Image 1 (cartoon, one colour):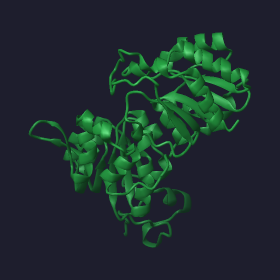
Image 2: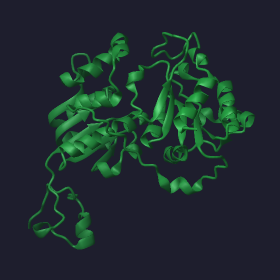
Image 3: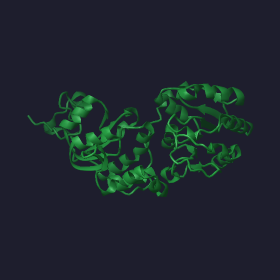
Image 4: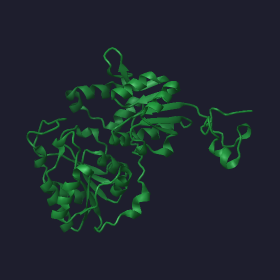
Length: 356
């Protein structure tokens, strides 16, 4: 009996969807979709990095329309299911499965050692991105295309001179030229009816945190309060955004400014909350990537990273402190340079972006 084992819908251990729904069998199946290439993407995390890696799917689908794509990640809920055939969480079972299989191309876009080690172990005709150097058990570029990203990661002097955005860099690693391909992000619309936001439009989301790794990026709490007050006085709606770490702070800001704060939520629901906003003000955080993925207007605070890294797709502005500071990639800033980013500067930027 004929079995189309190269078919996109072949499951191996159970009937395919079209056998169950249509009674189709391989010998004369009109749904037969032969796979030409097998591609593995490894991008484990962080969540924001997974989101900002999704533009590569647009190019891979264009270059390899008959490919079967598998993505290994720590954030499977953020990988767009309609663009990927298999989404594997990074765990022992799936790591073993991948090592027993084979691929035509592996794109390991993660420099974490566990990702590099697995990229080394999985069989493939071609490997791009990063591998593990067995001589020192450290990350190394798989080829010349990844050398730029590798070197900017280990030398601040080169990183400061970099003029390529992150999408440009990952496209280059994969052997392509970036042409403005956008993020792909589900807005999880199933949560949209749950919100009761009593604010005017346009609605501006203020994402007040920045995570605990680089607190040098924090904008002072009293500045958020003043900004929220000015925006509300100007007729704008203001919604405070954040996670558990910002919960008490956001409650204080809401109490002192009159802005709305609905609490903190699981990731998918938070993404939909961001989707309610017309503009998002944020530091370099996961919320930044969510806003870009949802094609929201955005004001990005940046003080410790190379500004060229960020691709805003013409939807936003990058604001930096007036005080020149050398806190590049520093967890803390001895000059507290974010205090020199004035509230009026942010307020004026909101007006420009909203056109009001």
